[in-house]
Amino acid sequence: MASRFQLTSAAELELASTIETLELVRVQLPLMEPFVAAHGTETTRDLVLVHVVGADGVSGWGECEALGAATYTSEDAEGAWRFLLDHLGPAVLAGRPVDVRPHPMAWTAVQVAILDLSLRRSGVALAVHLGATRTSVPSGAVIGRRDSIDEVLAAVAGHLDDEVALIKLKIAPGWDVEPLAAVRATWPDLPLAADANGAYRADDTVWPALDALGLAYIEQPLGRAEVEATVALQRRLRTPIALDESIRSADDLRFWIECGFTGVVNIKASRVGGTDEAMAAISLAVAGGLGAFVGGMLEGGVGRATSLALAGLTGLTIPTDLGPSARYFDRDLTDPFVLTAGHLTVPAGPGIGVVPRPDRLAACTVSHRTMRR
Ligand code: MG
Image (cartoon, rainbow, N blue to C red; front, side, top):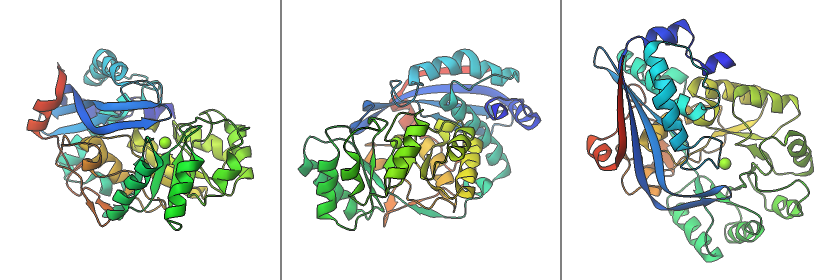
């Protein structure tokens, strides 16, 4: 497993040796509205973009999805920026192996940028490279915590006008059964899910009430490492449990399956350390009969394009919760992703299929560094 987190294979080193410059671009994208989850609130999306340019002038882009604060995982945007600037960027340019296991999101930005460059050279779309066969995917919507039930119902109604395939509410103790039951009462047949971001305990009294709501899944009910308690909770519930924060590599998922986990897995390339590792996790999930979907991370356009390529794989039977750009940003960094009859289009152009718009980069960049071989 460790090899997937190091620049050590002959092919990777050969590819890295063709990179002349590696740029780091830190951007601040204002969110349309604060996103409130059990782990914290994001008001501005702080992203680090990696841009690699080859001697032939071909370039590739990758996006680091670490949040502004180390809440969702132990990575944060500032730490990722320092790691990329001080360690990972120089190591890539020197063709020097580097252990990136503590920084999967920073590594993913580099891995995707190098892969994007390689695929652009050969004119192959990332989705095709990964084996994705779907040209568009049904999209669900995630609703962060609101001030009132009426606000939740209004938000759901707005998404249903857009024909989304599933609604997922962020929940936390004190904000769970009541909003979910209100949505369920209003739309009895709606595919509905909940994401707890690890905010509950196995002995909480809320489980029977949540289990009675006919949810598609309850995501990350317990802490990341609570394997036994989560597997035991799953046995008490009819509702599938989905793992998000618990899965930081394909090996993590293998371990959970060996421990008897039978639910659903939320796949995020950035969380597991790149598209190769995400593919390995998806293969395990499909082989193990688990449900799986690609989850969103408040991505900018570069990250959204990368995630949509993965979401195009046929083994992912549950709607992605990636959404259109306009749900998050007044203006995205790339041309915007739009929802058409509840579906998002998988990018078909070479590489990840998108590049940041120069005018948007100019407007949103707060720091910029260029490293040369
Ligand atoms: Mg989640």
